[in-house]
Every structure is written in C-alpha cells, then in structure tokens.
Image: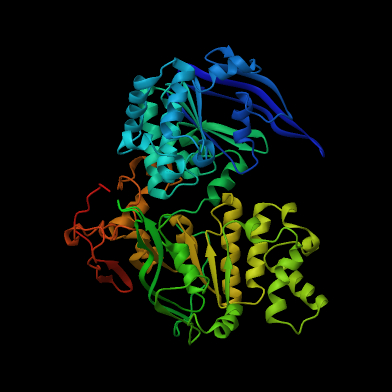
Amino acid sequence: MTESVLEISNLVVTFDTPDGEVEAVKGVSLAIGKGECLGIVGESGSGKSQTFLSAFGLAAANAKVSGSVKFQGREVLGLPRKDMDGFRGRHVAFVFQDPLTALTPHLTIETQMEEVLAHHFKVKGEAARQRAIEWLERVRIPEAARRLTQYPHELSGGMRQRVMIAMAMMAEPALLVADEPTTALDATVQAQVLDLIEDLRKDTNAAVALITHDMGVIARMAQRVAVMRRGEVVETGTVDEIYAAPKADYTRMLLQSVPRIDGARAVDLPAPDTGAPILSVDDIRVSFPVHVKDGSIFGKTKPLRAVDGVSFALRAGETLGIVGESGCGKSTLARAVVQLLPRNAGSVSFLGRNLVPSERETIRKARQDLQMVFQDPLASLDPRMTLGASISEPLLSFAPELDRAQREERAKTMMHQVGLDPDLINRYPHELSGGQNQRVGVARAMIMKPKLVVCDEAVSALDVSIQAQILKLLADLQREFRTSFLFISHDLAVVREISHNVLVLYLGRAVEYGPAEVILRDPRHPYTKALLAAAPTPDPDVARNKPRVRLVGDLPSPLDTRASLRFLKSRVVDDPDAVQYRPHWIEVAPGHFVAEHDAVESAAA
C-alpha cells in the first residue's frame, strides 16, 4: 500500500456571516499517497479550495474548522501560528490560480525566491542565488540568471506560474497543492505547466493535490479523483473508474457537460443562410505605437501589430469561431470590426454598408445590429442598475418611441427567452450567480434582435454545466433570430461546439480557416496542430496516448517583425525591424485555407 502523506477526516468548515452560519465544507474525508496525484474536481462553490486552505491554517478569520488533518502521521489542524509558518512552504506548498496576485509586485524574483531559502534553510547570498537559478532552469525558464533581476509584471503569465512552481518545489515539499494552476493560461502554456508538474512529481516523489474544474486536466494528470459538490465529496475512485463508470449523478452531469473536440456535438447548430455575406472584412490592420529603449537617450517608437492583414466573411445565421492564444489579436480584431477600435488599414462592410471610421452617423445606426457579450458579466453590467434597466437600455437609443412600461415588457420577454425568471427584473447584478449574469448580458445584446453579436470569451469564466447551458442558448437564439456570431475563445472544444467555421490567429495573422469539423479533425498548420494537441481531453485513455506536439516557450514579441514567421523561418530576414515576407494562402480542400509554412516546424521559440 502506498505510504500516506495526507489524511483528512471529517473536516468541517463553517463561516460566521451577517446572514448566519454558512457551512462551506461538510465532513470531507480524503487521503493522498506518496508520489500520487489526487484530482479534486467540482464546480465553483463546491468547497475544493476551502478544504485545503482550512486544512493548513489559511482559512479566513471568521471560519470555524473542526475534524482531523494528519500530515505524514502528524496532526496539523490547529497548530500554533509559529509552528504552521515553519511547516507551510517546507513540507506542504501551494501554487495558486493567479501568480500575479500571489507574487509580491515590488520585489524581484530573486528576492522572493531567496526568501523561501532563508526562512526554511537559513541559506543566503550566493548559495541561495545559485539555488534559485538551478530551480528556474529546472522549470524551463530560459535566461534564468537574467530573470532573477526582473519583477513579476515583466514576465508572461506562463513564466510567472513557472516561478511560482519553482518557489513551491525548491524546498522539496512532500505535498504540492496546485489550486487551479492553469485556468488563466493559454492551451499550449497550460500543457507546458502540466508537463512540468507531472515531471516534478515523478522526480521528487511528491504527492500532488490538483484542484480544478477542468475534467480534461484531471483525466491527464490524476491517478485518483475526488468529486465535490456543495461542500461534500460525492464520489471517489481511480481516474479510470470515475470516467468509465461514474456512480454519482453529479459526476455524470459534469462529464456530459464537458465540450469535446472528438465525438458528437452536444449543441444542434442551425444551418447558416446561403446568400451573400452580411459582413466582409478585408485586409484589416490595427497597430499601436509602443515606446522602446534602444540605447539612445530618448529611445524610439515601434508599431505593435495587433492585427496584421486579416480577411474573412460571415453569412447570416453563421458562427465564426476565432481562436488563438492571448496576444494573438482575437479581441482587437473583433473590436475593430464593430468599430470600438480605430483601424490603420483595411475595410469593413456590414449589411452592404462600408463602415468608415469618419462616418459616425452611419456607424451609430449600425450599432443596433452590432452587439457584444463580454467575458465578465459583472464588469460589463452597471452595478447600480437593475437587470430590467440593463437589458432594456439599448431600447432608449434605438426604440425611443417605446414608453417605460413597453420597455419593461420587452425586457421581461427577453429574460424569458434566455431562461431567466422575469420576476428577477428588479434585482441587481450582485444578487445573481455568474451564469445568470451572463444570461443578462446575452439578453441585453439580443433585445434589439441584432444581425451580428460578438461573444468575447463569453463562457470561459463559467462552470461546465452553466457553460453548456449558455452555448445551447446561443444556438437556440441563432435559430430563432438568424443572428450571426463572432465567437472568440482560446478553448478549441468550446469553439467546435458552437461554430460553423473557424479562423485561427497567430500574432495578428490568420494561419488557418475552414469548417470547424474539418479543421479540428484534420489541422494542417503547425500552430493549429499544437493548439489541438495541448487541449485537455476528458478521457484518460485518449489523454495518455495523445500525440505530443509542443511549442516550447511563450509567444515571441509582436514588436519583432520576425516573430510572425515562426512557422516559415526559411523566409525570415534576420532583422527585427525589416519588412518580412507575408505567407500566401493555400486552399488544401474546398473552403479550407492554410497559410504557407515550412514542412518541418522547429519546436524552439
């Protein structure tokens, strides 16, 4: 039997709030063996994170914690603060979801890493510096010595997460608690971080508690799984047992809600119209001037090419999925299309009208048919306005003939259509769940029955069951109103679920376009292949045997003109400011276009 590292027995966590006591964790029991990865999965509010925070003395001040937490046979629940400070970080380490908030912004990486060594091992000076360099190299950060002098904001999200892992593992703890460590990362960076955690687990024989809502990550990483719901463990078992024969209804619901790149679509998409496109985008370009240092007193200004010559067309009732990693230009492209950002070149034609930035009245009239649904509904809704006021606000501009009662009636009708109880019309955003607020955002966008709606990461912050509901809702509304969608996401499985066609962007340029089923079944461009290989699959057998197509490192700087030719290095002019070759489009199958690229792609960044 595997030696036990952590045993949690009947853990109960209760919070004292103005509205009474709230029981967040209800008698949770679980164990993790040496060298084992236990996946703790469940939706938001299930008690996953609170279980481990409370077990190791990190619960909020208003929490009451009871039960038993044994670490390597020693009871640690309720240890004095001084003892716990020496225990945490040395024997159990945490990696949190957002490294930018977990790292101290005004301290260099070197200072923060050496603090760990000084506190737990009394190691300082050059010895500590060398140990820090060794661990940065171990987590595959290039130019480790130089990175030590940098601050967290100077590193990419993937690098910051690797720094967090290095800080957590440099004390060689017996248990690593990874709390949603890849949720905020792009697919290829997520794959690198998961590979890293897996390699460190095998090298150090550390136990890993992997907390996530992503069933694909669990399938790939865990040996055993604990499924949590509303503060309780509803099912435990090996990863193969949980995925092949789940016993709990909640587990089955989670697995059925996960969008998949393979298999049948869960969403029944209506067929788009066959007529002329309602939207035509031709060679659109958006760049921003960025001041850079070049050794001179004043430095110089270089253009950051956020969108660099993208073209596509969209028909009525069609959904175009726009995919790519952070910084590839997805959101900038969409905002330029709906005239929320100025473009430097190119043309946008909508419903037969050429949208010229200088013609403000034409653009204002087009706004009725151009709407957006944003990623964070709470940030896009006015907290001072009721749901009814938010949903009906577009009517004030585009249907001024309606009186207040008529606007309210239209808002109630729209709420019913998006699955919201009309009785909630006088509630405020903070009184609703994330899924309900996202439905409010959809209702607000759809109340004028627009011809085009841009969904910018509209479901990425939602739990899988709520995500599945919103995707079905969008398809139903598309069927009813013949609305076209630009659906922006970094999640290929979600894009495949909702999209008729897919456009893949890399550093502001389109590298592949075609029918969603074709591109995701038969990708031709190396970047699309890498995105697909990196996407987590909610099937242990597939996840274990999936071919590894890895892009090493983070996206290169878009200020360097050579960066966009990462996949066509044979045509690169070795000058970061030179005008570079623009790859041609090749039609590899009817409607399936791929940007020119070298036959063999190097993995190096």
